[in-house]
Image (cartoon, rainbow, N blue to C red; front, side, top):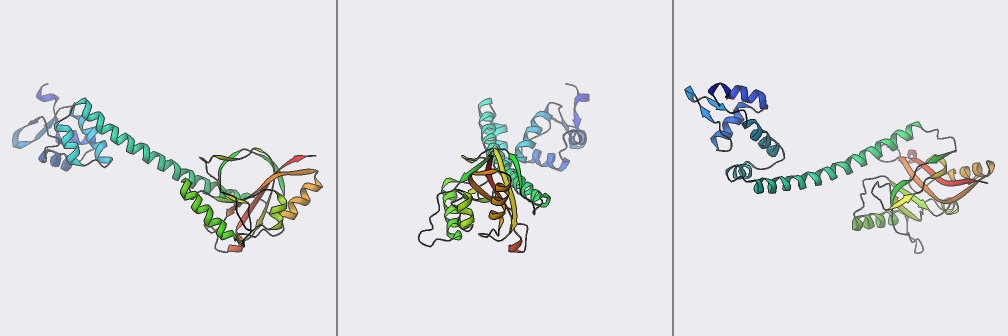
Length: 268
């Protein structure tokens, strides 16, 4: 390699995007030094050093300490570098999983709120729906005067033990329309709309209605859905799912929370 092949600190900084002050500091602490010095102590770098500084830049960006990087540089072997990269890969895997969960929560909440803005709240409709992964909570017990809030807190504790992400939208599950109409404040179970959930809201044909109400209230939506099903020769088939598309996250008035009620049906 001739002197003409070397890069000044200015050129090296422009190519790598690393500030000259940082390169000088790395040199001072013995982390990364130029291959040569010219007149007036000017620093000169070899082109292949770009490879090393790029890795150092990646590692510092991941929060690896300069002491740890310096130790790796001084005692570098394929094995020691593999060990360091394995550690960082494991940390990145964990961070990617965290980011993916956060993305899923934000995506679900946004989609749910946008859907609430688009629906015709006055209409009952029937449409085919895809299956949806959920995490069902335990059966609720109201025999001793238990309330919706007790059931909700029990579900929170259940979710904590099983590591269910409670940031996902929470819904009400009723075994059938009769139990929903009897008392919408007493869902049989609660559930989280959890993409990693072990339970499933099945795919199929669903009758869907909407109402504005606070938790545990549903107005006459159960009667309206039942009447629509009778008029259109539809048979309500199984559980009722209640999900609030708009709740305290987006609404100030509790009585304006938007409840979506769904029940699977089949034609007679």
